[in-house]
Image 1 (tube, rainbow, N blue to C red):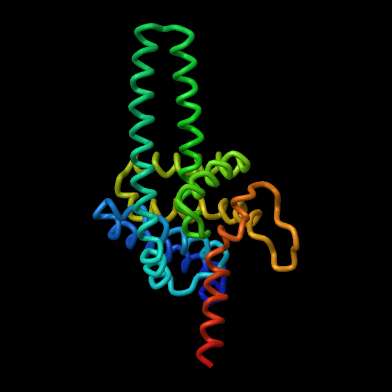
Image 2 (image 1 turned 180 degrees about the vertical axis):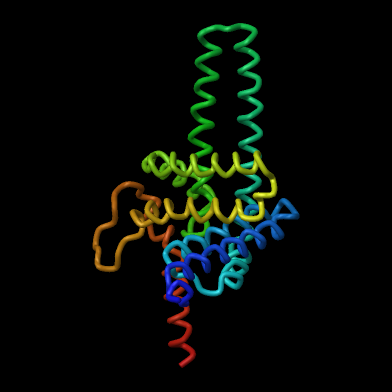
Length: 240
């Protein structure tokens, strides 16, 4: 039957499902020490951003390659995110109780402002680890560009928030969904991210870069895949 041909849509779909399950398992195992969650998410997105483009190769090899290359920046970013989340969660908690006691216009304004900042930060977090996987840049600029991207691409940002909320809801209903939830979350959000990132990666025949985010499209924030290909080609030429 054609449905079971190796190039059929069904078999390609099943291959992607298998990749998602394998990557989900690897991420869970690599995240057990907790401090390695950041590098694991970077490596997951490194593979998934290629998976949704049908550019995947050896997914296990690619995962650990990215895990090793981005380990330090992934850990640093994880620590920063946890610290910021705890800071804003505590501030919102205090402002909420202040509003309940005082119930003044100022308390409501401060609480609303904190919730607004936290909402933007939550959207930006969805971009941070994929940004590390895709681009070369400093930790500070990754954070700044993630915030800018999340705002300037609000429809995709909101869609990724909905995807994340749906995955969290599934896990709340049944924690056993963890066997595929992380991989599925990364796959579906990557479908949004590739469309966003394409805006900031100039085509080879384009002389001008998009003027949306100057820092995001700078040479310092070059596409890691293109840089790596050029480096490999240069190394081969030198070897010859």
